[in-house]
Picture 1 (cartoon, rainbow, N blue to C red):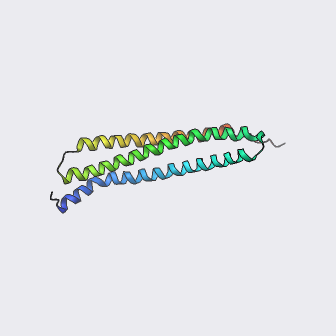
Picture 2: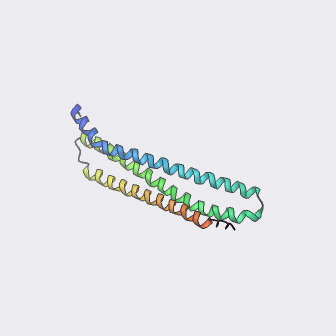
Picture 3: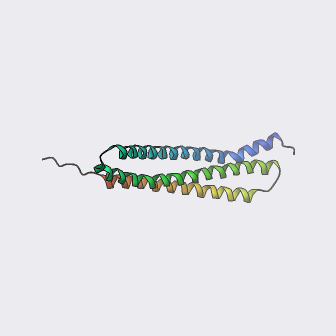
Length: 150
C-alpha cells in the first residue's frame, strides 16, 4: 500500500463535509443532553417535594411529573438517533479514507450509511420538536388565569 501526499489531500477534501456534519451533530447532542438534564433536575425536585409537602398538593406535583416523563423519553430517543447519526457519519469518513487509500469501491456502502445518517438526524429533530411541543402544551394546560383587577 503506497499512498501519495496528493492522495491524502484528496481524501481529506472528500471528508471535509462529513466532518462539518459531525460537528453539527455534536452540537445537537449538547442541546439534547442539556434539555434532558433540565427535565431530570426538575423531576428530582418534584419527587423530593412529594416526600416533604402536605399530601393535598401531591396531585399538582404528580400532574407535572406525568408531563415530564414522556418528555424525557422523547429526548432519550432523540439522543439515541443523533448518536447513531454521528456513528454512521464517522463510518462514512472512515470508508472514504479506506476506499481511496486501498483503492476499494465503497461508494454504495458510503451512500447507504450517509442516507441512514440523514434519516437518523431528521428523526432526531422530529423527536426534539415533539418534546418542545409537549413542553409548550404542558405550559398551556397548567396556566393559571390572571386575577382580574377591579
